[in-house]
Structure formats: C-alpha cells, structure tokens
Length: 369
Image (cartoon, rainbow, N blue to C red; front, side, top):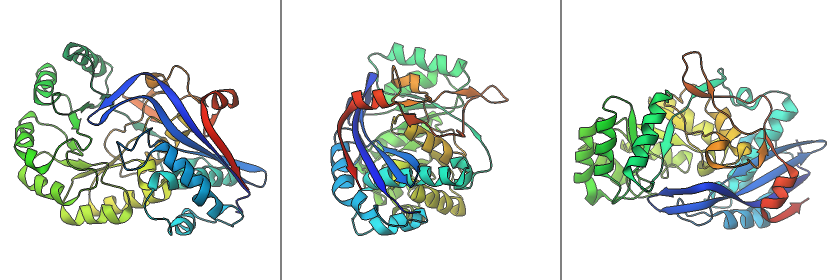
C-alpha cells in the first residue's frame, strides 16, 4: 500500500503520580504518536521513550525530530507491502528503535484496518486474552508498598513486580517476601547495578524469585551471561534487547532465561514478532512490557501479547492506573478471565487519540506528504 501522508505529534501525558525507578522519576510520559494514511484509510502508532535518555539512549523529542526529518520522508510516497520492507527502508539509519517504532506500529495498524481484521490476528495470534501482573515502583514508605502488594494479591494478580534499586533493595524485598512468602514475585533493576554487585544478587537467590529483570548495564549481554552463571535465579533482559541480532547474541551467550519485549524498544511490531519467534525456537519464554503509553500504544502491546510464546503475565496497565483521562479512546481496562485472574483482551478496533485531548497535550506536530 502506498503511504500518502504521515502526521506526527510530540505529546506529554501527565501522570497521576510520579513513576520512580532506578534511574529517577517521570511526572509525565513523553511520547510520539503517528497517523499514517493510505488512500482513505489511516492507522495510528505510538512510541514512548520518555522525556530524557534515561531508560535508553533515546528520548521523545529526539525520536520525534528523527521521524520528522528522516524516517517519515523515507516512507511517504512509497508502496510498503510488509513490516520487513518498512524496516529495510529505514535500515540506513542506525539504531534509534523507538523512532522507527513510531512508524512501524502505525503501519501495522493501517495494514490491519485495510485487511479488516483485528491486529492480533494479523500478527499471527490464535488467542484473544492474556493474564497481566501487578507492578510497583519506588514509593514513599515500605508500609505503603506492603499495603499495595497485599491488595494486588487479594485481587488475584498472578505475579508481583517490584522496582529494585540501591537503598530500595534487599530490606524492601525481605519485607515483601515475609508478607507474601509464596506468591510469584520478581524484581526489576532498570540497569541500576554492575557485575561487581554479583554478591548482592547471590543474596537475592534466597528469596525464590521468578526472575531478576535487567540487573546490569542497558547495553550489555556479556556481563549478564557471567552473572547468570553465578546465580540460580533466572535473569530477564529488557533494556538490552533492542534488536533481533542483540537477542540472538544474548541467547547464544546464555545471558538470560527470559526476555521482555516492548514494541517501542525493539523498533516496532515487526521486530517484536521476530524476537518472539527467535526466543520460542530457543526455548526461552517471553513476556510483553509497556512504556506507559496511551491506550493507542498499549493496544499494540496487547495485540502482541496474544502470541503463543508470551507465557509470563504481561506488563500491560489499565489507563486509570496512571492517567486521570487517557489520551485515546477507548481507554485500556482490565477484565477477569474464566479463572478470575486479571487479564487484558485483544481489541477488535484499535483506540485512536481523541482530537481535543491530543491538541491539549501536544508539544509539537508536523505533516509529511
């Protein structure tokens, strides 16, 4: 299909409360939304690399500028028949997966709409519902965290994820595990440690966790392989997984026993599906993560999560968890599956930004045609 027009929007979406991790905190999620048009049909994409290059080397303002000045002009006027072709057209520009994901996710939304089929089916999924876990960032007090975790267990979330960082690490984890001795728990370090901290993670082994997510550098696979040899707890790579090739290297080195796949972080849905397939063939289970996107971007994560090798409960959040009002409509909501477990359902129709809300949250916008 020929790409006739691309509209880009740099937005800032205020959070109900700050999101705190090992690298700092965000009071608003900065993202880039894309409307891609072919004839009379359009589709929306989104990537949310945040306001500053702390989670990854990319940031929303930079991704917007690159998409505006280089990536979108490389696609407009061309007949793009597959996600692989789109990635090939953009391959001359090194790295920048979030910027590429802006356009890749929009293309898949447009493609699904032209096909008249739900996105998850177009991606190859055969199910339409997956369980989700409960996640907790760094909060003001341990008592507050314990109350939140207790509530999540009562609400039957199948696993708990805890942000883990210096000064919010072993004592916090010990308190939660004492309160919930049997419930599945894992920690997310957001690249906050180094291989010299291996003795700390040897102590973490004693807590019987499901995994340790991204303990070491954001761009590392070698040190993670060394750490995995020293500890029993499975390592999950997140920030390090930025491409199909990086995933292959991590699997060959034995750097991890789980892989978290975020469409934005890996360059879009095209690469996300390829990474899923690579991990499936290697016998390494995956799970889907999100970047606190609006329901437009969360719908892409949800559709992806329906693929078979996503076996660990997803990191997909209801809109009401972070936003007083979602930028897009309908908002993402949780449901209960047949066993009463919180889950998300694949959307038949992908959410789109509400024009008035989009205008009020837009920092910059442009049209490429």
